[in-house]
Length: 298
Image (cartoon, rainbow, N blue to C red; front, side, top):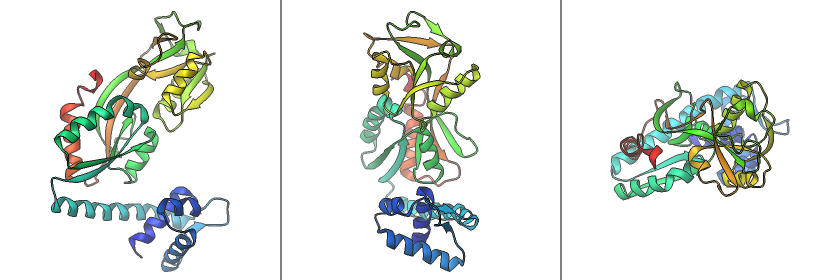
């Protein structure tokens, strides 16, 4: 058994497809199938059920998958430690960030951080917060910015900024002249939501349920500007973090407070117990010193 076999096997498990996994790993499907079969032969058990349309793990496969992730993470950490020993002033960081946070904060963060640490390279994975959490936990990312909640038993949290969620409506909408609304006021409204890989998607649905109704979802998108344009055409309402709401076209859109307040809390997460490289520690220190208490005023 070698690490390559485990990497190939875990990718098939994540994608539930040999074809998709082969594309991501940049190998041919026959090569990937051969490597996984070799692993099964060495372990003398079937790890993946190939009889279905998608490739699913057997009971033995589930056990091997959990241990394989830990082994791969340990090997990655060995490489990180050795890289740190070779050159403490250089390094690479892989972080995840939802597009909403990226639009608001990432350019200024990068400008200031690279000015101070020009030899540290940051690779950005721009994805929804729910996927950021999953990839940080699995070791695919060193850390990431997410909207809370995040399981504190799994992650170390560095608070970044807190805002409130606001309602945006067309100026001709019946609620347009209100200074504030409750979630119950939105019971009959057509809602334009972010896609379900955004934590805000889940939070809004939960707030609707808490107010005693199921959200009437008219449209879902991962692009805030597209959702805003839909509101401009009076095709529905949307709930945005305050900084994003301010970017809306106020010639056509009114911004309204929501009560009780729905917080939009952003933290930078890293996996508990995982080795942090020299570069990663510098980034955490930088965020803590320069942004964790001032980001909301940027």
